[in-house]
Figure 1 (spheres, rainbow, N blue to C red):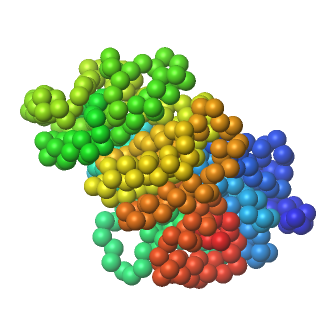
Figure 2: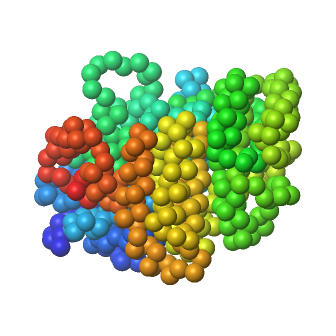
Figure 3: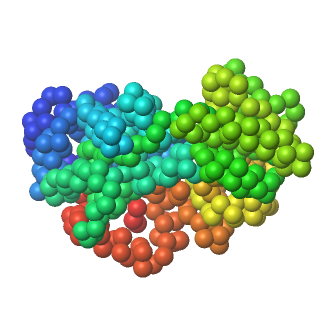
Amino acid sequence: MIAQSHIEALCTLLGPKGATTDANEIAPHMEEWRGKYFGKTQLLLKPDTLAGVAAAVQYCNTHDIAIVPQGGNTGLVGGSLPGLSGHNEILLSTKRLNKNIKVDAADYSITADAGCTVAALQEAAAAADRLFPLSLASEGSCTVGGVVSTNAGGVHVVRYGTVRNLTMGIEAVLPSGEIYNGLTSVRKDNTGYSLKELLVGAEGSLGIITQATFKLFPSEKQKHTFWLAVSSPENALALLEQARTVTGDRVSVFEIMPDIGLELVLKHIPASRSPLKASHAWYILLEVATSTADPALSQSLDSWIETAMTAGLILDGAAAQTSAQAAAFWRLRESMSEAQKHEGGSIKHDISVPVSAVPAFLEEACAVITTAYPDCRPTPFGHLGDGNLHFNIMQPASAEKAAFLDNWESMNRMVHDIVARYGGSISAEHGIGSMKKAELSRTKDAAALSAMKAIKKALDPKAIMNPGVLFE
């Protein structure tokens, strides 16, 4: 238990709007979106200024009080909930740090407070005729601090990279309470270690992000969205290679989905319908975009798709003729996770392998899992363009959900072993959190893990900053 004197001191420090012990107000912050993890804490801090964050962290460091930072609470690996690992932690939400978004159109950069949502950044960039390319299903809820801390990916990584590639500068409060002022849009800075790079993807274990500066790009003036059917991941990969060449590397989205995934969406998501008349084994959501009107691109796409269909690489397809049709294609893709929630238990794997290895990985992993767990339903989908798959395994239709989910850790180990053989990652974009600590310890290169622990100890010697994540 945290001493009442400390709770009172922190409440006084941040004022009545900046802290609460009200269980009803704390409750919405304590449940992960999947419903897999539930946290607990005596105190929720919700500062709305940099000075408030720094003062709270400094107090906690002085008195050895552990802190868990939380952004939009859209995480999936138990990385932003207090109390999961037996620590008496307080929760610090950055949602009220949401007042400032500044676009510098000439510099192609945007700077925003940690509590601003990704959707708000997209809108601000668009108003200045610029593109903020990070796009993910939770963009209306996930926040700047959260996506930086987890190095979020999304659907546009194939062209624009992850948040690490987009992040130019960071302002953060370190575990000591000191303020790191690395908020810059400078493209070149060769002055030693980059603390920014350490904070991106650190899951709040090295400090609390309070602001960040990101790259912007020219807005998309012309966009082509396709829903394509293919017979296999091998053909999908060949299609990706052709698409990048034909379009002059202007592929911004290349998503793969199995027929079972589409079936679940059609079954559970109201008003959804397939773009094609017949069912096929696999589907591709392809989007090509350019910052200038280019009639030649339309012609070359039409010609390429016709050739690919004649060759049997594409079995069937639909091109969005309106923005509403494109949105309907996207709704099918973005509803994959939601539809699976309605179907029963699903064991998740957010993994990545080299793009060229995706077909072989899928074949091997599906065979191993279905042999070990007969009648389970592999439902892999995701970002073929960058090798990141959400390798989800649905329970057998007749199984009990709880009994199936008891296999989570053993199934994870089987899948992660296969991922390791292909030189991949056990966490492509969701992070490690508390869920994958043991697997990180088991699969991470020993020297890398040792270096990570040394960095943690150097910057957070008292281990007050999100002590329940990353390491056992």
